[in-house]
Length: 361
Image (cartoon, rainbow, N blue to C red; front, side, top):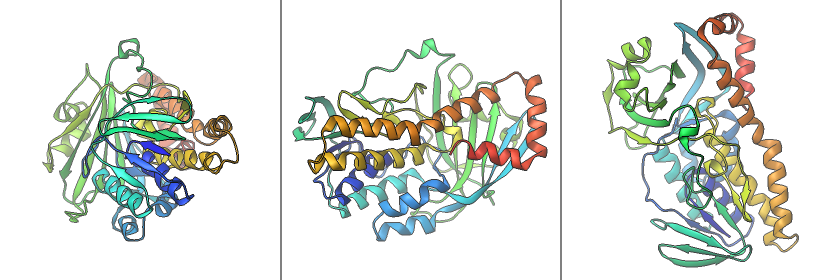
């Protein structure tokens, strides 16, 4: 089997496939370690799966990670707080991707970095053409991200309401809260949470990641001025890295498979980041794809049956998160006057706030 893309979804698929006894090749167009535009929030539901995927020595990453115990939403000069049951983790993608890549190698996966996949030919067996040459496989998993050249072009962002971009950087902050803080404003939002790098380990770094319409802002310092409380807080920060950005961010209905190739993570569908389940969905979809392909690779079923099973399980287990996030997004985008009673109830009803958080899981 060939997996294209070495992020959380791709490594999860490759590790699971190798653990199931299949010969697996993992291709990554970039080189680790690297920063990625990401909220770096690992939801409680994903921690057990991540523990199973990481090799013994890499599991220490989970113990080293900053624990996130609550979520705070800053909107319309109000603050809605809710605990995160069990507790989540904040793990820098610089560390997470490297740990999963090392774990894939420990699991027996053949790995290649700086290997760009140009095309996938055939319908099983497949011919994968890359910058390193051609490779053959009985099954292919596409984990190459939301801008994958292996899937149809995304809808024209102009057909949506504005072009969305993502911007991220790490900053130092004295005594950051153990919460994920979401600052909403007209045209986007910005998430802030503590994070630690293995190379630093000072516990005073925060990840600041924003999703914003390009006509509203394009740089983080512009984003900070869009929310008064965020702006006041940001004036005390010192940068730890140069900001990085991605564009465009396009929302579309997830497609778990195309032309006999299974898609996982953002290659299947881009989830609104504010629900904090992007990494979880990548890990879960990658593992699910590999498990669905296992009977085919053992010559017990046909490839078409494996794809059908993956589609069905994806719709049952993962697609509801996309629908819930869309509903929450529409709720937050209603006019400010209509939002007031909703925010009042959320502020004064912790059970309702917890329910909304759980509804995205």
